[in-house]
Length: 100
Image 1 (cartoon, helix red, strand yellow):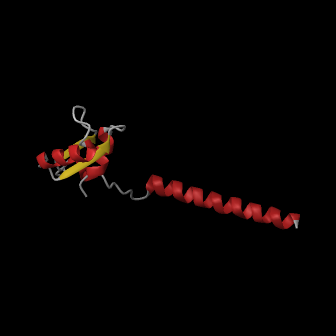
Image 2 (cartoon, helix red, strand yellow):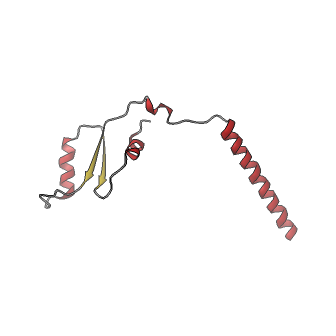
Image 3 (tube, rainbow, N blue to C red):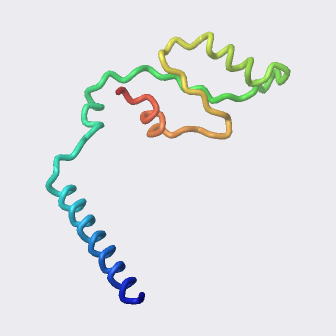
């Protein structure tokens, strides 16, 4: 029984080693995909980022009314809305609106 487990362990180590070398050689010499190469030349859309917060002067209307008022003034194709407790970084915005 112990000899059987030992052989199984050696087999698994061998399979893992072959797999590791195969993936390493593939990364070094294989054809790599570069899905974001064309992003520098792509036509990026105009984006509006809204940070939703309740109006300070008139709290009776709330965030929904403030967003509705803001959306009436937006002319861009893409609108991203975030809550007031999170301000997105520029990298996140680029990832969300990257042209396909």
